[in-house]
Amino acid sequence: MIRYLIRRLPSIVLVLVATSVIAFLLPRLVPGDPAAAVAGPDASPQTIAAIRTQLGLDKPLINQYFHWIGGVFTGDLGQSLQFQRPVSELIGDRLGSTVQLALLAAIFLVIFGIGLGILAGSARSRWARTLVEGTNTGFLAAPPFLVGLLLILLFGVAIRILPTSGEVSVLDNPNFGFQYLLLPALALALPMSAGVARLVQTSMQAIRQEDFVDLAVAKGVPPWRINIRHILRNSLGPAVVAIGIRFGDLLAGAVVIEAIFARNGLGQLAVSGAQSNDYPVMQVLVVGAVFIAVVAQLLTEITLSALDPRVRLG
Amino acid sequence: MTKPVPAPPRAPRRRPRGGAWARYARALRTPRGITATVLLLVLVALALLAPVLWPGGYDEQTRDALAPPSAEHWLGTDEFGRDILTRTIYGLRTDLSLILTAVPVSLVIGTLLGLSGYLSSWFGSLMQRVLDIILGFPGLILGIIIVLVIGPGWTALFFAIVIAGLPGFGRLARGGLLSEQQREYVLAARTLGVNKSTVMVRHILPNVVDPLLVQASIYMVVAIFIEAGLSIVGLGINPPKPSLGAMLNVGARYVETLPSYVLGPGAVLLLLALAFTLLSDALNQAATRR
Picture 1 (tube, rainbow over the protein chains, first blue to last red):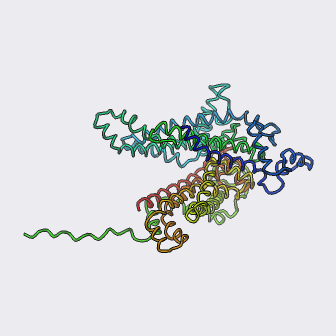
Picture 2 (picture 1 turned 90 degrees about the vertical axis):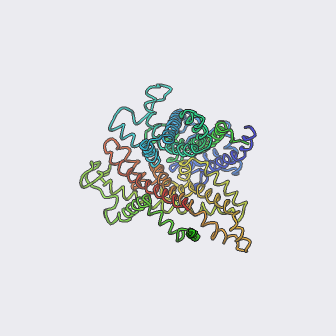
């Protein structure tokens, strides 16, 4: 395992360094004076000059980069331009909201994805399989924001039992917080769980043809045990990979879902940051998003090897 | 009594006649293929004919703002009294103009990057690294970065769709290249002195084109969602120009008073996505049946 981690390290570092360079270059890629771009349209020449020295734009590019990345490592993330507050504070305020959303969505993704997949993969009767496959196809075609809008239509207009906009932290008030969290998490998780379900289904069907399943049947192993011990365990690999890869998409999906459900999370911060060219905020969010996606992928591969001893990491 | 005469050896089963085009034409004649073609034709025709069917354009205002659906305005009117159906069709026009240009560009560039390994192996592996880095960015984040650099609008969406698609096409092309590269016919062609780029274009490319077309069709759906995702948060097509995502962005605010504002563009978006999903299924069947 440790050998594997060491071997994977170079490519991870490469992706992260490349990301940080892109993030660093963001305000400098814009045509024109980056200090003016950072200062905004109605800044006075003095402000622009002040920002130029503050960003160190008069120094060579390499120095600027190391100065910035050094700040990121020591927790000095800079000052937001639109809120005039430290970026670390802004992110700290909103982190909880997005983490709660992503966690619940991930739980739903695992339950619905694997659950639906097992139903479709083991259902014998025709109508059950048709039903599950129909639901799968429906969700597969519908992106999170459409599912979210439909949920709002359903629960905000037709059956008013769940709140469709705003939020309460689960930590402050578990009951209300969960109510506010339920619909956005469902909207985020359902479309992705359809993809996971299809993977579980197809690999279950493929593994059902294997010799060791026939052997188990011949030995007289009860069907539920065959389904769980022999077929399911061997089918989960692709699903685990799919869930791990989708975790990054889950975060990106949160951007849109938070906008639709009026939640004040990191996604909302990214949107307002992008609209008002708040570069210090955007730089940190971009690096953070890629970092989390990379870590999720790494954890996925480790889980996969724990699940299937044939997958050797090394 | 005569012995039964053994049947003459059957003629070897003929390959389905015709080249790639005939195969694709057959794919489009399957039930899925027909549904996809009809849906796409209707949607494209509507988008193309929009200026003829609604000569007033997408900005024509009436006195009633946020009027409910009626015989005159099938989906009602928006917050400025503009017909929602008209704006939806013009939005569809924007979406189609975007994906039908950006996806082919992404397909061509991605394929070239993937195949470049055949001409120069270090360039090929360098490109593979670059594609890996692009792949590391979660979908919308990449789009947001591009919006930050060139500002929201059609062009930013175009580049976002082109760049986000490169890893998919590049990896498929490279995978095909690596498996075809060692086949006898490629080695034979090389031994006969055919030069590398001819081998690549005439011999390798035709063998990797099927999965690439399937991927292009799948990526159309992704591209629609990139447009809608960015526009819905206000980072894509901006008012007054309509796009399906931009309509959903504003429509979401009136979801409780005027559900048709969301349902109309949402339904068109789903139909468009459905058409390309079915098309990719049909193409996939044709590709694997070979």
